Length: 277
Image 1 (cartoon, helix red, strand yellow):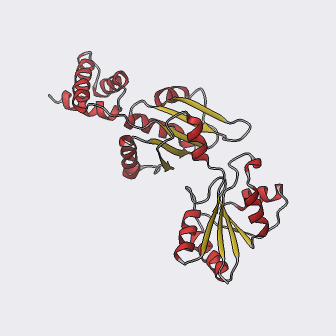
Image 2: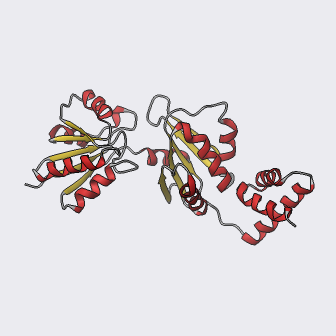
Image 3: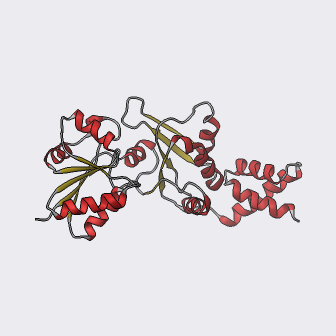
């Protein structure tokens, strides 16, 4: 008898956001595969559900994959949950689900809470078309390449970020994208839920007075159409004026970027070119 894998969304904060279908599935399944068995254990205890659990995270993905396949082969029903929200979105659940599908097992999804969608709707930015980027690469060329992709993206962009990396990410976004409208959503569905609707520059200016806490959803306004020729002429004129004031290349670039609301990187390239003339 063929087994079944059930991807089960869990609350992102408020325990009351669990669905009736999710509770029924967890009560009737054979085993629960959890990204963090401690997080899942709190949810199960809240609703008085007692089921065997196995750990399934990025550090044991190969072993977890083999165990789950073995259970499915024996006809078991496995419920897969992430730490919070929708399994398969920026967590190992995606690899497990794809593996089970490739092997021909039935895979179904029990929908529910998602931090990305919740933050997007609460941001006040255009939610008709959006691009979900998850977590950015931490460093190097891969990170810069992704930032350049985001720069050209005209849809609203949704990112996830940890509190200890938020300032660097906001700075990198500002340097690459220029100043744009954003929303910073944290503690979603919890007692201290907060959505700050601001700009990249203002968020950076305020971050020292308000140290980041909790996991963040960062929602960024998409790129707007512009006249490249006119913009290039404006940048060169303004940068030249700042250099004439005695500012160095970095100083002139930062001031021109602020005045024209463009990425610092673009203004700096122009400043370098003019300073060599």
